[in-house]
Length: 126
Image (cartoon, rainbow, N blue to C red; front, side):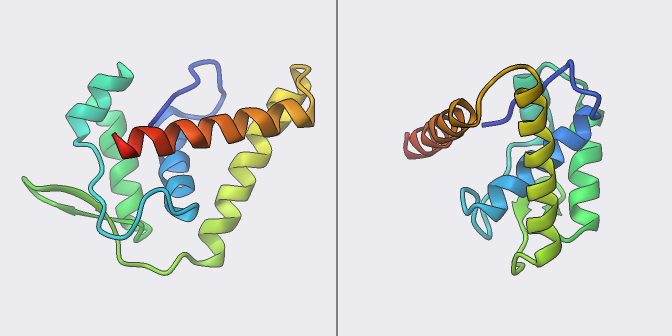
């Protein structure tokens, strides 16, 4: 569900935050859905748990997730504000700009986005 780009100038914790905001704003993650534990996500991404903890802490400060000690992190009961959607648009625009600069066409990017969303949906169903 989560991927990191080690070549990106964007910090790893910010990439995690952006992906969670995107998943929430697109409805892939719903209110009350549990996120992977800090250790589980860090292990699957091959990064330091402190990086995931920082992302979760900042998301909690923004009101996007709630963390319950020894239970886990959950998508908060929020209505997706215009600010969250704008953050998602900005993150996607930056990402798409990078791939356009690498030579992909708009149609290729659209196809990749549709394929990635289909993969997310298929993983959720399993």
